[in-house]
Image 1 (cartoon, rainbow, N blue to C red):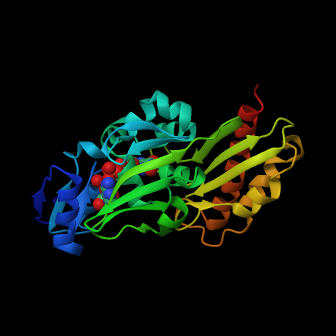
Image 2: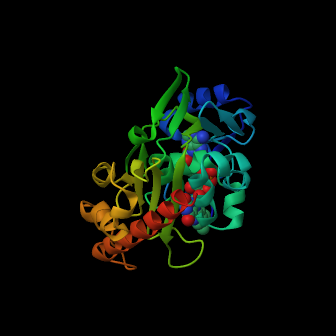
Image 3: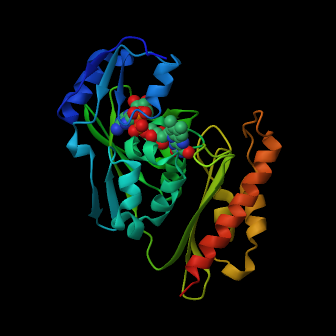
Amino acid sequence: MKPAAFEYHAPATAGEAVELLAEWGDEAKAIAGGQSLMPMMLLRLTVFDHLVDLRRLHELRGIRQREQAVWIGAGTTHSAVGRSDLIRQSAPLLARATPLIGHAQIRNRGTLGGSIAHADAAAEYPAVALTLDAEFELLSPRGTRTVAAADFFTGMWATALEPDELLTGITVPEWHGRRGFAIEEFARRSGDFAMAGATVAVGLDADSRIDRCAIGLFGLGPGPERAHHIEREVLGSHVREVSAEEVGRAATARLTSVPADLHGSANYRKRLGAVLVARAWQRAVEEATDD
Ligand code: FAD
């Protein structure tokens, strides 16, 4: 398998990279770890005349403490995310999602920004970013803008990124106090994309009443989703009064675009999703109450 011919560009700064993307428009594409883009180009599912390599852009790498948040450069590899003590401490859900992504070789090359920008419906990082209300910094020749995760994912492999925009960094707010986080997924083989997955973040007040809650779903629609209706419903309840199974059922009840393929029907995936939400809920609650 060989890709169609393309011209290779290796800019030294993010500013140069977006100028190149603007110059070539739809004929150009940024390449980071190449773990999603290269297979598609090799299979000729997609063709670009110009590839703009982000590898030399040091400003896109790094993990830094910000006020009440952690900032992660879009070019940071999955492996670096998984190894970071700061991320384990400030955004544990992101750290816990990392070993579930592909294989070690993929995690060594693939980048956080590449996964977010690619926006695969079954990918872990987009769902985690949505669950944690992350914000994305986008750079173009027109300047910088910040987009909330809730406004970024717009459909199947679709995002708010313009063709001449680069994702430069991701800011993940910290949760303080009594809180628990969990991610659960089911894949047919280790390293495969998940058939379905769920993320839960839960916060409790001193009386063990739920004062914050976020439930994310992946592999269960055209993109990552939040189960806002059940999040709102459980707020204020004592954590022991909430049934994990009921949360799982309610979180998946309203899904209308669950994918189906030879590995599982939409109905099967929906039921799987309910079980995964229930398991993630249980684990997140156990962590939040473990004090
Ligand atoms: P690339 O492949 O380089 O780019 C992907 C897309 O993002 C392209 O459209 C590119 O233009 C765009 N892009 C990249 N960086 C930027 C940026 N900074 N700004 C704007 N656009 C950008 N992923 C999972 O989530 N879960 C899995 O279980 C999983 N399993 C995998 C198994 C295999 C066998 C393989 C090959 C991949 C798997 N992946 C999985 C995908 C992997 O996580 C990729 O690394 C990731 O999706 C893309 O990151 P990348 O840096 O390689 O991006």
